[in-house]
View (cartoon, rainbow, N blue to C red):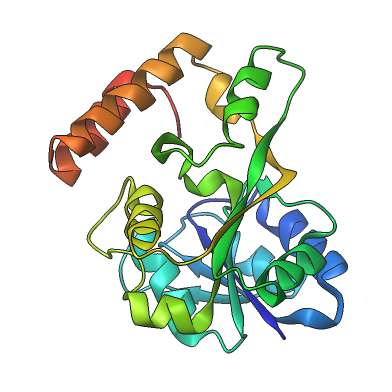
Length: 231
């Protein structure tokens, strides 16, 4: 059983090389390939990804959902593992994922762990152990059998925000077996460098409400940018 790792990226030169090296180091014999699906970076993201051992490809369409779909379309592993460019899964991720699939789970994720000394972010970490819609974001990484990803239609390529929430909810409604691995994927706290905890929670809450009310992608993206100073 092999794993194809897919990383959607855009201007991630600061972290992409280190992440690819880390994933290659800890995946062992189960690694099929690491595909970095780039959204048109203006920095050296693709060059550094290739130098670290990944296959770096320019996605025909920018947007995390479209970029992940493009990477998945070229992957050849039995399991697809989607990892954001600023997230480091536990060292045991390959063994954890293969074990979960062998036990009959079709897809799943880790819980969240912030790379920070900010004590108040432990509150966010705690709640990601629950199977709640608000915990369906991509920061916890996502593994899925390739066959299921194909039959599901993948991520919605027209979505630039909330794509992971929509995808996970859609699969949960199909009653496929879902596993939350109780180890922490290490996530950057860079969003909190220029924004307070309350600002980030308020922005997240607002976007979830807008999504549930059927707001457009443009409206949600613009509102998020309006509420937070982030990238």
